[in-house]
Image (cartoon, rainbow, N blue to C red; front, side, top):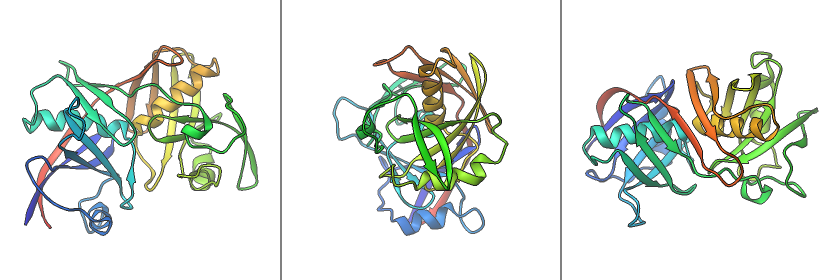
Length: 276
């Protein structure tokens, strides 16, 4: 059978998006790995799947698979593309879309200028909820990795993030430590490793080594986690502009217990079909 898909990206974080509301297919990790290959397949950071909801109070179920075939809880850049996709495909006419993910419910708002604001829900800091192995919650933790001592923040945005402050995001820290942090035993489900350089109270630069993918051009949940970590430390104030290699995201957070709002673009690249 032929399966229709759309190639999309959010600030260069690229996706294959499949509608499994009007189409039917069973996807394997092996297929996903083959499709993700940039030389012999379609090429993408993540596969996004649109499914009917399990919860009657939501409009869709949103599932995310990394390039290595592993399923993950959340993807912020993907969420913006998801919103544009379901509108472009006329799966909904709503401007405010309620979506269930394995990381919890999120709300997507498509703006008149084409940008999408995602209500990512409230960040979680308790170590067990990240998950992260620590005796008690803290704004920062002493962390040893690959023989180096760091101070890091651990945040869940529906998926786990480790945020490290650096003087310069291009100083080689990501290349040296990204993969080691991703697989560190204190993060039982692995982790997205973010490296943030604060420019001023409203502006920071960020690079992210994502679980199961490696460095991406942009990471929406990583931008949310970095902004939240910086605000908690008193280094940033909402709203924050996070500059990623692929472009900028605006992050708003009013404080503990409040949702994180992420605003940015979503771009359709092309339509295609693949034989399953």
